[in-house]
Image (tube, rainbow, N blue to C red; front, side, top):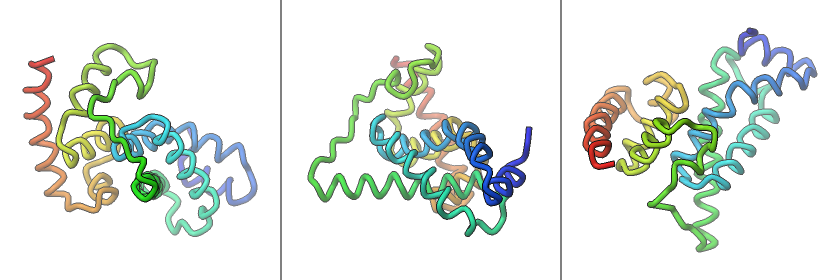
Length: 172
């Protein structure tokens, strides 16, 4: 498996297939970032697609190709926030509190679907760090950078989320 740095270099040299590989590698985590903010599948997919387009267009500005994943997650977060702001301006914002986990990915097993049902019931800050950490496969440090919080805050939010999830899972 080629590293992100190798793939980024190949993309910058004109290899579009290399970017396709990066999309495949990060599609799920980018969607998780967008879903944690938008909480609606279609908008999250739009934001994710927008994030990949922006990443492709601005790839030459990436200073350290080894940080592609974190850089992409930040772009995804901003894309999702842009869509959320646009919806608010248009007065069509409908955040789905009763989000159905099966809408995220119909190929998820039952345990993961149950966990997602519990995760969406978490408070916003806890939900966001859990989605980034466990569904986006980011390190705590990357989650802190993406969410613009300190590592200590993220760690505390994850700890509280774990306790809260245990209670929620007992209810389900």
